[in-house]
Length: 296
Image (cartoon, rainbow, N blue to C red; front, side, top):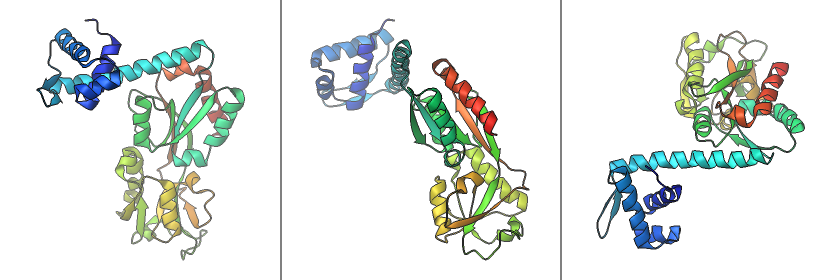
């Protein structure tokens, strides 16, 4: 079967509008011609993509599946064509970096400055995402490289542990305990905690909860937020306590924290990328991983 991508793009426009008249205006072709295109597409596939009468146009189940798959394929093709053009002209103009809060607070700025000095013609786009959103962004080609914290890693990703550090218990500055006399985490079992929701990244959240399980209690969670900066501000205001990667807490003046050095759970900052990123940015991948070993 040979189907022109022009027809497939018109098909997607019709899917969004579910109205031949509006789709005709957007595709800049006459409505009868658009109808013939869609009919020919259906005949080529041997399926009915739309249920339609004089008033309504609705996708069939087969049409919905075809729309989702074709949209993904065309996005992939656009990405490949665009990146191929840039590589041919020696101007793979930008690299898109996804990151979590702890990566930005710690090693990422120095690492990206190092990359910028090596490749000044490459524009770096910075996008802060939680772990789950990073996985989606990588697979959808919204970002080229992600820096996640204790991520779930599936087989589609390449990965490298960039840095390992400790978790820390954060509390307001006026909390009645001195940092040099830490009584153990179980001392805080009756306190209120601000923690991320499971959607933040299941493995990261499971690691946090295993810290409490290891100490023999279930935390009293009064608020969930996917943003470390929000959790820290709520701690500063006295809403409760939180546990964050120790590097996430640097620079905040309204809190104090105790680094949990003696617990088995550790923070892993992990670099994630898809295999074809190595084709587009082989030197950058190498420079990042080399830099990470020098700093860890």
